[in-house]
Image: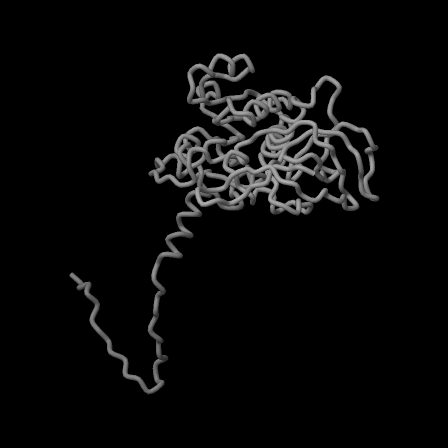
Length: 308
């Protein structure tokens, strides 16, 4: 079969159309005839390592991690699918005429979606759901902040967050031309809308350069989920004292809010301060005291206080 293979050249990695062996499905795999593929930042970077942790790997360094197509074969342990089903998902080596997709990661293509639209769904949808629900532990009533809300994952995260029922959804974008379309999705425009509470869940598509702002607007005990690092992976800043006090986390609490995993109440703040001082203090060496009559001579000194 034909596939777009990542090759290493002197000027850098490049895509090359090659003939490669057709994949053989394992017990849990669907063999999919690819009808459309998605384009993501990972493909633009031309990296071959973005699917190394997936159990089913193509034999060649085939690019792509998002596709939609028709099931033409399957393993013996596959359940819930049949030949001819339309599926979409994140198969390793999607840029090929045929690819393997683990059946537990496959989603059926709705009738309302074309192959092209279906191929653009899996990465954004699965990433946003994983960030919001699995890692962000979002609950009804939470305030959600999405950085990079105009990206593919950001748009899906905004819509999924509103569907799951938080109090409000906040979003950021560096492009003024995108503010109006984001407002149409129901995003509140300013962080002051939280009334000083801050964001309970932060979905971050930016990375290190946005860290100072996130620290200032995150609520106590907020869940900060890193999705992308387009703004860099390293940034140095001095956090304000108030932010440091609010973000410092230690297990347990001495107040009635003991059900919380972390707390910054005055009692816990004082307790942590005392613990840090004890840890930083040098060890105290106390001289041994000898009992009277054990062979030592006691020296009696007059009291510094004098009687009138």
